Image (tube, rainbow, N blue to C red):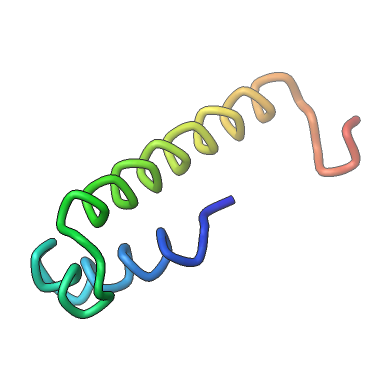
Length: 64
């Protein structure tokens, strides 16, 4: 799951803000914004891979 801060950062990036602008808006450092963004994208990528594997294995939401 994405953290609240990761979601906030992604939403602001979607609006076109740069990392430094997000940092100022959220009162955190630019490296922190970068870290939140990178962690969020990694989690999204990992989730997509898990979903793909589950589909290939024929696993549904009930585990069958």
